Length: 440
Image (cartoon, rainbow, N blue to C red; front, side, top):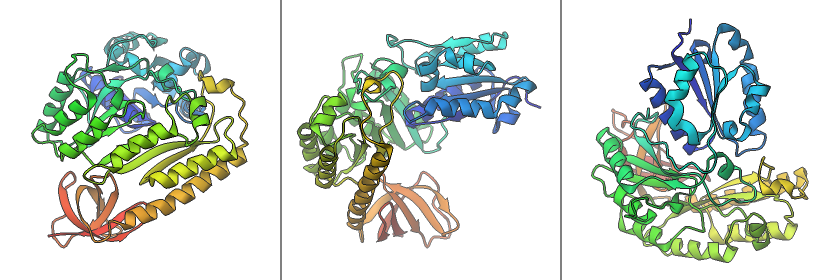
């Protein structure tokens, strides 16, 4: 029988959402709640939602409907995150058994909202608008990964890309002080974490409220904290990406040789319609900085196909950029209209079948590029962070500094522990992974 102060939390979406959930879990536990493994065991059921993908809100309502019968057992429901902020009090109308609706910009108010919930209130909201200046900082983070720790350094977005709902669901850009970021880094290193990932909707839009450090300087400072072995960051925006970021990657060995730099399209006409505020030439100049670095830096990106008005020629320009950059990884998506966005008023001129065909062409070509890129690692010895074991194959799995999956064997009778580092010689390559053997 579920007790009143037990909770179950399910998370959808990106690393930002996953890390938000870690902080929400820590806050709940500090308020005397106990986390359980299933909805059936929980007194309070929470869904931390993402609204980036097509039909995200409908998926949330379907999920809530799946568990509608549980309300008869006296359970309470809450919807958190982007869909909560986007749909607001309409959630109460469509799912009357939901008692709590809170966007991410209101998580600082969670303790008081929980008090209201415990007092029997049934329509509790945390729906801050874009003007909030608060960031969600807490020492109560319940980190779910034993060796990789996330640190959010900037929340919100001011870019207003015409297809994106994030500025409306996560508020304006607001950065944490560099002092608080470095203090958190030192604290979690003392707890045994060796890989730090700095997070933000646009991480290189970071502006230190203390006026001390630029994003690149903060990145370097985190990388030089004693005990830090690897530092990653995402996501960057081409408008704010500077040569200084490449220089600090070269200067500080602990900063991973990997950059995610979303381009979205290779067509200047489509980039303008997307309100990306740069051209393909501007983007390629930054790629040039990265390729000129002293050590090879792995590149990944996001691409949207079938944006309203995209012609066959626009798509060819995207394919040309793909061939020129030679990414190690591409996250490709078909355009889908999102609520509240300017693109919603544009005529969606590309048929779904054409979008699907273009996406398949893109992914097929990218697979061949990756096959060639990964093959270059054959015979190399690289450092791999161990993430666990694959008993079925008798392999250890992990990731390189470039964030490439590496599956390897070892002659040691004792398997390396997750979070440890091994030198691995690459003996075989695939388009999405590397295979090797530990160098004893």
